[in-house]
Amino acid sequence: MVGVITGNVVNSRARPPELWLESIKLTLKKNKIPKRKWDIYRGDMFQIEVEAKEVLGIAIKLKASIREERDLDLRMALGIGTVDYISKNVQESNGEAYINSGQAFELLKKNNLKIRTPWIQFNTKWNMILDLASLTMDSWPPITATIFKTVLQKENKTQKEIAQILKKSPSSISEGLKRAGHDEIVAMIDQFRLEIETKTKQI
Image (cartoon, rainbow, N blue to C red; front, side, top):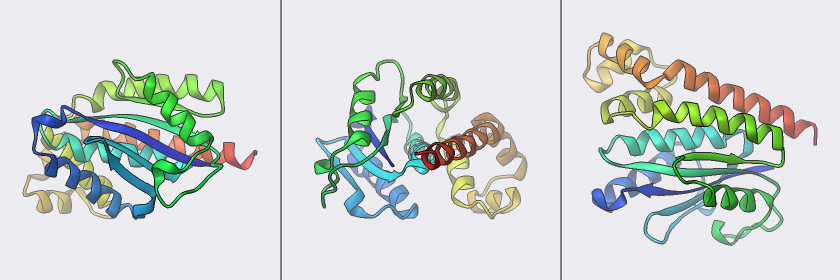
């Protein structure tokens, strides 16, 4: 079982493409996603293959990196399932995970984040959770996204150390994390990872 993210950059023409391109590439590099597992195409579309349990965490890290730029956001569809054909180019790979991701992307309208898996009840539950989480994440201003992203990237750092890195006061870091819904979103990612691990072990 793998996870596939299919997405595009919202308002991509509002900023020079090198800004958001670099953000996506740097996030994937920091998370050790090999080049053969992702591609950016048709200008502002992208597709990424990751471990099934990591698909939500990677998607949120990507969102935080893009939200650092004002007026930009991501629309992403997460698919989980099997892979029937693995190619050197991720766009040419195929299977249940890719189909689920593509079908979920077609259903994105007012939503910026959606998931489709082989498990119907799981889909219903987690799409509701993602809709609620998006109410917070879709409203992140650039500085909040920066604080959230930096804390995720440097999990072993204290808030005081994060404050020094970002040249902010510790209190502003604490307030920024609260505005970002940091604790709740991290708990959501952990719960998602746990449930996917449980599901895949049952197969």
